[in-house]
Image (cartoon, rainbow, N blue to C red):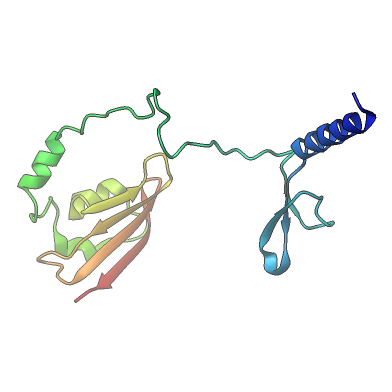
Length: 165
C-alpha cells in the first residue's frame, strides 16, 4: 500500500478512538445553569464527572422493536368490596361527627381522629412514607370548610381549616 494511504488510515483510526473515549463533564455555567462539555470543568464548577459517576439512566425505545414483546397486557383491576361500598355510600358521612372537625388538634392519633370525625374523603402518602395528608371535604355540619390534616407516623402534626364558598 501507498504510505500516504496508510498514514490517512492511521489518522482516521486514531481520531475515531479518541472520539469514542471522550469524557463528559457537567459544569456550572453562567447564572448557575448546568452545561455539558468534553473538557474538565474549571475549579469549583464541576457538578458531575461522568467517567467517575456514570449516569444511572436507562434508555427505553419509543416504538416497539418488531418481533419483540415490549408491552405486557394487564387485566383491569376488579372492583373490591371497598369500591362497591364507596359507590353505595357516596355523599354520606362515613362515621364520626362532622361538627367535631374544628376540635381536632396537634398530637392526636389517627385512630382518635377516625373515631371522632370518620374516615377522610381523600388521602395521600403514608404508605412507606412518613407523612400522610388527610382531607375532609365540606359536608352538612361543617359546610363550606375543607379540613386538611398532616400526620407523621400516625400523629397529627398540622391542622388546616380553609373556608371555601
